[in-house]
Image 1 (cartoon, rainbow, N blue to C red):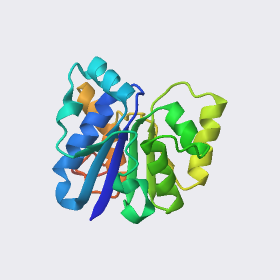
Image 2 (cartoon, rainbow, N blue to C red; image 1 turned 180 degrees about the horizontal axis):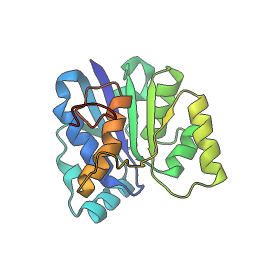
Image 3 (cartoon, rainbow, N blue to C red; image 1 turned 90 degrees about the vertical axis):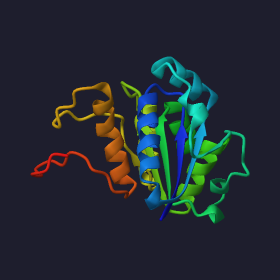
Image 4 (cartoon, one colour; image 1 turned 180 degrees about the vertical axis):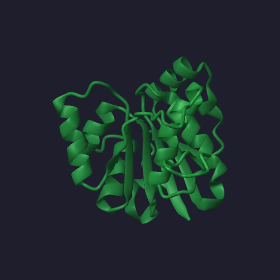
Amino acid sequence: MQKIVVAVTGASGSIYAKLLLTKLWQLKEHIAELSVVITENAKQVWATELEDKGYENLPMKTFGVSDFNAPFASGSGQYNTMIIIPCSMGTLGRIATGVSNDLISRAADVVLKERRKLICVARDTPYNLMHIRNMETITLAGGVICPATPSFYSKPKTIEEVAATVVDRVIDLAGLPVKTFRWGADDKA
């Protein structure tokens, strides 16, 4: 059973966070603890993009970005996985340079130093050279960069289905079971 923290930053792509949190909650029998950190910018972007404030009613434990008493702010909290979705380039840069100025960057630092799983769902385009170098640094430190780049071979028909192609990939990367389209499989989920 995993302990997972999901961080939501102010990058565009709130639909990814909403879908991931929904799917993780549905997988709660595989998760010992599920915690969330959401920035103030993320709340604004969520309300704008999704036209709701669903982040106010999340069924999992939520923490503020200044709450360094959160269990995942220390390696002794033994969280296995951190997923940052969407991951802004500012957050990515702070993690890559070791700046732990809030709970998200501190938790990412902890996950990397403990050699656990950090998944950054980068959401920006195009990338500049600083973005690419920061991605390289995080990758070399053991993190996984999973750009919010949907796939289309499953023939998604709605925006939620398009976003789910990324979210299902993230769930795969986290090592959790997910029923999804599998290339070359007879059962196309």
